[in-house]
Amino acid sequence: MGDAGEGLIDQDSRIQERMDEVARERAQLRAPAPRDPEQQRALESLRLARTELERQLTATTHEGRRAQIGQAMAEIDRRIASTTSGGNGPSAPAPAKK
Image (cartoon, rainbow, N blue to C red; front, side):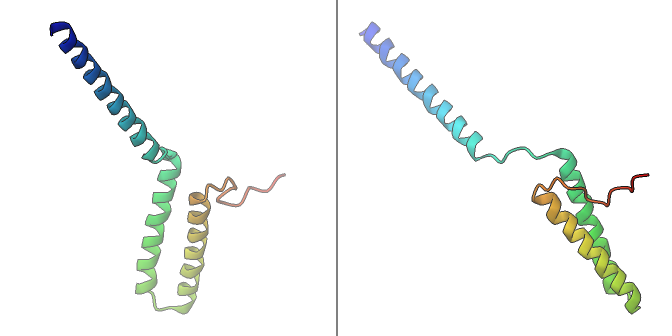
């Protein structure tokens, strides 16, 4: 029984290793792809800027300033959308050529 028992133990060990390997492969497939750290930093910066503009908008009573803040928030929203959609276009106007 010694040899037969060892064969079963080896087979169980191989089955368990294969099950672990399949579980790791599935976890890798489900895990989101790592994002570009520079893009993450830019997105977080835009979100913080928008939060600050929202705070300013609630505190401002002058209509001219409220309009400026609204335009700035629209621009930030546009940049956030561009960043999250993977847009490769520039987020700021390109400098004029001389």
